Structure formats: structure tokens, C-alpha cells
Length: 320
Ligand code: SER
Image (cartoon, rainbow, N blue to C red; front, side, top):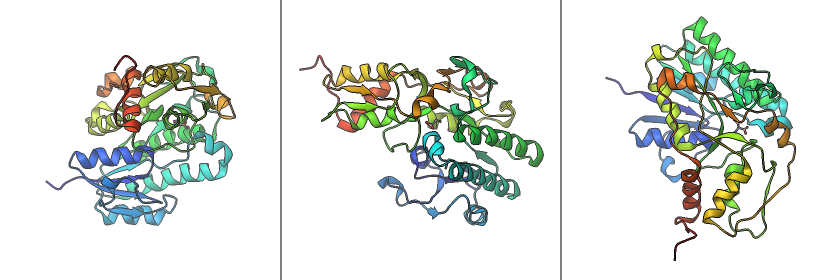
């Protein structure tokens, strides 16, 4: 049987780096594409296409040249940068998605497409827990693009017979690559400020609870939904998935368990109002029931992994 060929768009980004590595390590054939080459040494020898996803011809031609069977479209402008550069963010997020969906629907070889949606589709009227079909009138350019993107994916499924699958990611936290331009970025960048020399300045208030997820679970969700039988994908839009939820104060207290000298101050900026519009957690019972989703990494595990990656060893307070 011919092997699957996974074409990853945005492969040098936060999620793309982790996902490309996981698929490669699982023995899958991957082709990376981005506007900049991968930084991770273990990805540097893999096939790479320098490509702007806004270029429709490039998207169709490069995917076809490699005999692509599975597309993972992970390139996007995130929420905070999107508010600063709304036209650019809209263009990248929407034109990029439409180019990928058109080229995939036109192709006779492409079997499945993965595209991530986000907690940003939810507006401020949900209360703390966002239901699968909760109130979706987003207030950011990023959120509007994800909400519209969900509708476009549903349209391509219904009218062009394209098997496109999607989950709503929360803030993603991983060791391999930094995020860029998101509202949940504090939960990654704080690990670069463990040892001062000044306290870490957090751009959200200490009690801002947001849904978050370790990369192992984020990659696991993508693998799981992409390998589920088509008959198990019952939702016409994107699936809620819940990892863990915490506020900055809780994360920082957990860090202090291992790094007693760690200090933080709180200086909320424009990102606070973005965070205030998002839910604290997501009800993910549909993903659990339909394709068996479950998250594994809790806050203690997450903090330990992040500190170990920065330190290569972890100082426990009661040791020595
Ligand atoms: N991490 C994203 C952001 O903060 C949310 O999906 O924009």
C-alpha cells in the first residue's frame, strides 16, 4: 500500500514544530512548509518547501508535487498580533485556509485535512464553561477568522465532500518552540524568566483563568481525530477539547514549588480584555464521546517538564 504523505503548513511554528517531530518519529513521511525553515535540528534534514500559504498556486502545486495525502494547515496569526494588524491577520488566516481547502478539494489524492480552531471562537457571553455549541460571537480578529473558518470547513465538507477535521485548541504550552503573538503566551514565556534578574512581568491579571494544554496532548488530539473512522466525526464544526485550566497565580505558585526564588508582578495590558472575553474552560464531552478524546498532562507534570527543559534537571525544594 502506498504510504501516506503528510504536508504540514506552518511547520516552523509552535504547533507545527511539535507535530512535525511527532509524525516523523512515528515513521510517517512528512513534508514541511513555512515561510521560514525549521529551527529544530532534528527537522532540518526533512523535505522543506518555502511557501506563503496566501499564494494559491504555490499551495496547490507544492502539495501535488509531493503526492500529498494528508494536509495539516497550522499557519495562522494569533489573537494579540491580530488586534495590532487586523487586515494582515484576516488575510493570512482566511486566504490561507481557503487556498488549502480549495486545493485539497480539487485534488484526487488528498484524503484528509486538519485545521485548528480555537477557544477564541467564543465570545464573552458564555460564562465560565463554554459548551460545544456555546455562544460564538467573538470580539477579536483572530476569533472571527476562526469562527468563519469553522463555517468554511463545514461548507467544504457538505458541498465539496472534503474530509476536514478540526479541534478548538486552548493556549498551548510546550518545550520545543515559543508561541508568537497570542494572549496565552505568558504561560510559555514565564519559563524563560525563572531566575530573574527582575521579577517576571505578567501581562494578565493574577486571577485570569484560561484553558491551556500541554503540547503532548495537543499533538495527541490531532493524531487521534485524524485517525478516527470518518463515521465517528459527527460534529459539523470544530470540537471543544479541554486540557487544564489555571490562572497566572496558580501557575506561578506551582513554579515556586521548584524554583523558590521565582517572583512575578502583574501588569495587565491590552491582552487582558481579549482574555476576559474567553471562557475559563471548555465542555469537551462531544469529543470524548465521538472519538475518545482525553487529556493526560496536568499542571504539576506540565510545570516539571517545562522547568526540566530549561534546566535539564529539576531542583525539588526538599532535596539535599
Ligand atoms: N493561543 C491562542 C492565542 O492566545 C488562543 O488559541 O491567541
